Image (cartoon, rainbow, N blue to C red):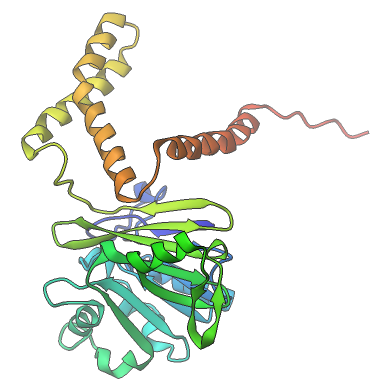
Length: 309
């Protein structure tokens, strides 16, 4: 599995040299996996990052794209109409997204793409665009196989297949083992509109990637704790800046306990939402550190070039 971020900004895109490290585009990322059909690109959200993604899609000879929307705020939708995807009718486009307040992905883009707001009406270009509403994220599972394609299942049906070791039925009578599939679990979050978080599990490799965006935690600490937590974070950072004073550092660490509790609760809530285990999370972080250490070591090591003979 490989994840590439084309846009990480919120609210609006920015263009300034100080934003070069993480880029200036709004939310859009691509998840690539051998479990996807050849030429099929899996995209999360359609912020302005979908413009450079579209250029890479063209360069790579992509043939089909599926976009999973987390929600419909402008910074997650504003790029699609400006990309090539609505206008390349030979490239099938599938849009998944939450059904909220009577609105799904089709209604969203029919509204955004119409005069006088946009010069091209959605109905002029939408014949190759398929829209799929997700009314109940917590009870929906997406299963993908490189030959079978996409399958939408309820959690109940998915768990029965998994428990019985049965194959997943795809179109045209094809059936494949779950062990060869990419499994996408969905979880409803709040922003405060209906928002979907996605957990991607590449069954052949065991790699998991969870994308949780713009979630206002309504199950954890109440809003009145926000200011104390901000102060706790400030005290902790301030304490780290004066590590020469051990007493000051100890006091700052003690005062930052609410901050650590909040972080722990957030990690725990995400873990429960996606049925992850804390040991697995720790193992994943360990792998990240181990993968980064050789690069850091090479960077710190001064290499001497031998003189020419």
